[in-house]
Image 1 (spheres, rainbow, N blue to C red):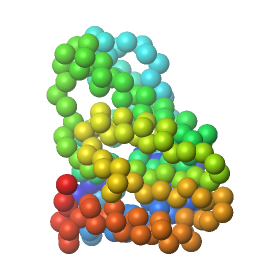
Image 2: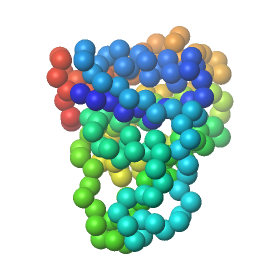
Image 3: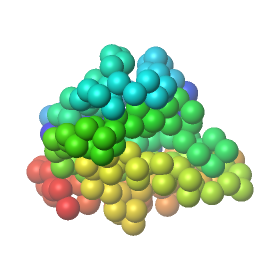
Amino acid sequence: MKVLILNGSPHSKGNTSFIVNKLKERFPNGTEFEEVNAFKENIKPCNECKYCWKNKGCCVKDKMEVINNDDYDVLVIASPLYMSFLTPPLFSIITRLNYIWCNEHILKDYSGFRKKKGVLILVGGGTGTPAYAINAAKLAFKYLNADFDEEKDYIYSLHTDKLLARDDEEVLKQIDKTSECLQLGDSFVLK
């Protein structure tokens, strides 16, 4: 089994990374993980060059190829909330999925991504809402053919201004609940 993690956090030891690492511990031995850190990679946003209006795929070659290779079984999108939204570098990655829509609707040529499971991790504090970030992630899951159930596949810690994720018992329960939906014993279950 292979898990691709799109991590929108700039902090390697912050709340988002804590949850990502706890979730990784729940996967069976031998699971392969590939993590794309949006802050560290130089993945450019879509600049609407219209290459994908006339050609299959995207003309920009960068770490996006890891996503486009479509060789993973689980897609994890993890982000702190900035102004109630995904972090800007992570959103830039999602804008690059525009080529999928263009290939399908303009070129009428879409071979599709293979089915996979989607998991969303959001972390934040303050009075904002995660609704905008959830909607952006749902769009990414849709284009990458990742089955995402907002009730089971969503781990959130939305009070980190008062309680760190590592100290939040509800977060640990959510990690367990999500991991149970992803696996049964040592085998992966795509529900």
